[in-house]
Image (cartoon, rainbow, N blue to C red):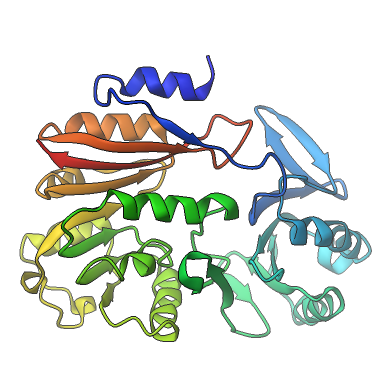
Length: 335
């Protein structure tokens, strides 16, 4: 049974309508890729086996173009390849590429200088990481763009960012299509704001929360650059948002009063582990829940616990073709 039919069976007691499936191109769709490094090759894991490669057809064209050049540079430099265990790529819609090199060693002055040479020669942004260390010769955030109203976004190599450039704009459009009678929005796990900023034109006011420092830094800059006036950010984990609603005061709220909002909707886009029981209890108090999930199993677990809510709308997005992974975009409302 394929993953789509399995999910249809799992969710049919909650959602009886036909489920639309948004497919991705079969190649060149990933603008974020992570590889191991071993035996002078990039490495990916397929179940328990290792696949050695110097190219990856699922990667964005700009990443595909840089992969053999990056690998050749690594293999020709003992300084760069020594104790290197992972190489991560990110690309933006402008064709720029950011490469992170992860090490099991201290970052010496020599390797830092070598990474600068690598950056200039290959015309890429290079970041070095080791335990408790990071080196980047410029601290300029990696700029990207959402095709929805050409909104600028920013990221670092330490931010979550949607990996499929083709489906992101479709996911945003779908979320917007679900919304009726918007007032204010609370968003948990907002990342760098790929949903927050497009939704700013729909809701009166938005409070977004995220625990990752880099993500909040990137979103704060994007809000300024895009001249968005109705989004407030707070670096809070989802569990801290629960405490906030229980009356705890956080200086990271920057004197923003939660009581000043009239929330009609909450948006959650949690990690694969889904929502904790305390967060589910908070979310259940909202009339309308926009739930974006990358894990069908935890999604089903969570919506089964939201007993007062009905799944009103739901679509699937095949972010990773030919894998078991699925992205779910749904709206739940109180019956």
